Image 1 (spheres, rainbow, N blue to C red):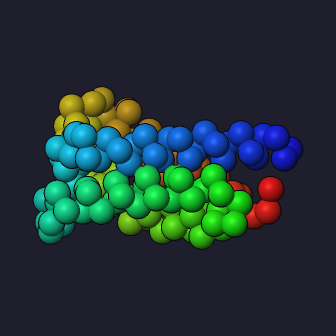
Image 2: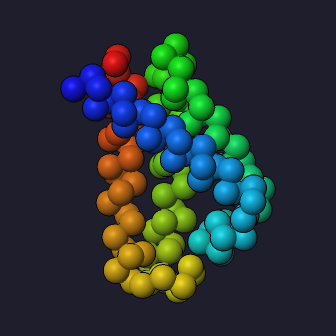
Length: 122
């Protein structure tokens, strides 16, 4: 089980760092799913991208893994309204299918669960 956990830590760290970098390369891709009434769209995209890269990197370090995992949990909760907004637009906010837009929502819970698991000792 330790090998599986370590593998998921590495995979998720790479995932978060990759997505975080994309926040800086293609910020408009993320801005489009921000709820219209939410202020500071572009700044929020950059801030969340920074924390995705930071927490993804810190997830790889055993001494900082606990804090990184909890940071990711809070970050995933913070960005959840954007995923809800995407689902409520039936994917139109990103030009994706309604099934894909709604299907993304449960993955947030999976990612939160993984982050919580990663906060425990390996």
